[in-house]
Length: 101
Image 1: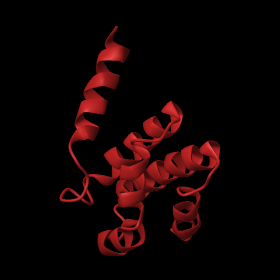
Image 2: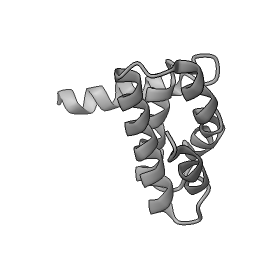
Image 3: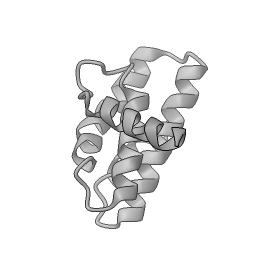
Image 4: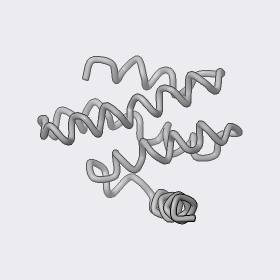
């Protein structure tokens, strides 16, 4: 997961597309590595700095950035259950209800 430090930097970018794409890429990387059952401790150490940044992006002015942050936090929640707040569950329920219509 050599891309993580660079992606962490992009989460703080002034440009909303950088923030959105970094959050989406983190979500993809976490999903891929979790499905391959990579070393959980190493993964946690590399991803830990992303949690507070993604939590902050939940309040981003861009709806696309907020959505990408929620998706990434959903992927991170099994690794950091004590750090990822439950508002992601609300987002998931909201998303599920939209797709059911």
